[in-house]
Length: 146
Image (tube, rainbow, N blue to C red; front, side, top):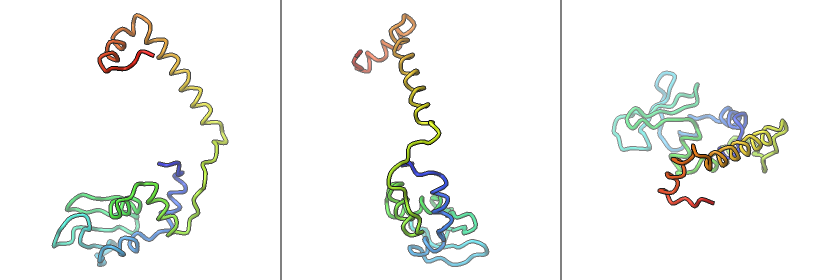
């Protein structure tokens, strides 16, 4: 997720009007609490594409495309997730952090230590008699023993 916190993504979503966003690319008409239009992701003559402003999502009953504002922009503009986040954050007026802040609670360091212990354990286990099958498998895959 490119280091974007769920809180940041929620803030961007909350400041966007998905009907307005999708409406830039799709001619939408109100249909009760939802909005309908022709799906931009496949050819159709009868509208099967809906936008639910209350939930902030879109769904096409024809091609089954669906998601939130990030998913729509990613699919429509062929963007990766980080690019869609940047574009929608700018549109919503939400500043993005320029660098990831180190974990204040020490979570990163704790996870690093756990991973180092696991690596050491499996490295030792590989060279025990019980690791023979794993060594054979790695050999068939062409993995260098070092």
